[in-house]
Length: 255
Image (cartoon, rainbow, N blue to C red; front, side):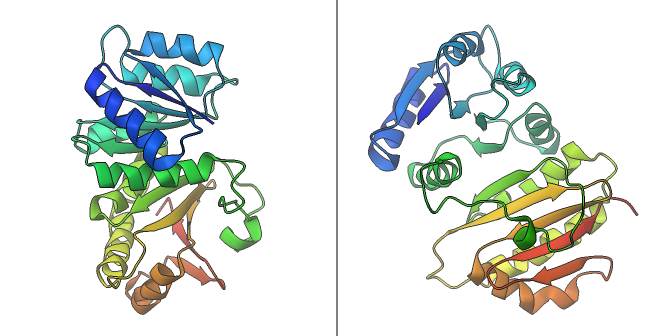
């Protein structure tokens, strides 16, 4: 696997490189670039699986880099994690609209970023037998005949991460009903707050939109069991279906 770190601060690149090599997998090949232009040169020469990129950089910033990577048929499947000190809903929406699959806030906390990178690695590593796969009958029990773009949000036990769902949807669908989404986030937070101390700290969420709804699936059984306790608090417009080891909620994007 190849990971490209694009960051103008040498110290930050070294921290990320050491985390990848010593805490994730020593066999990963790590490339480094100090700006977006240099990153594109590396991407054009080498197969890159994961791009970790800063946003505010000289010559070419992270926004432009992400747009170029995602607009090319050859590189659009690269998993992009933006590592940035930018904050606020508009900035986060811009990150996702430019092509970020995930974002990590600065300043970097070692334990936090190790957990996040492990989850990203688990998604991207095609040789990992435990890698989560999209199974339509499991994550889309609503039998929608035509589904569009598929997104995966990896999150650890931090409340702010749950709000990324809103940012993803707001970027994809400007007319999505924000009040309904906030009701749903409230449900997730209630389930999150009642997790016991032995919870492993990570779960996967699958976000897949169709023409008139978004289907959000969760695969962590502990989290799902907690959500069941609060299912009755959701407005009736939502549809929830529980399977043996997963859950999918249909969130209308109109109305």
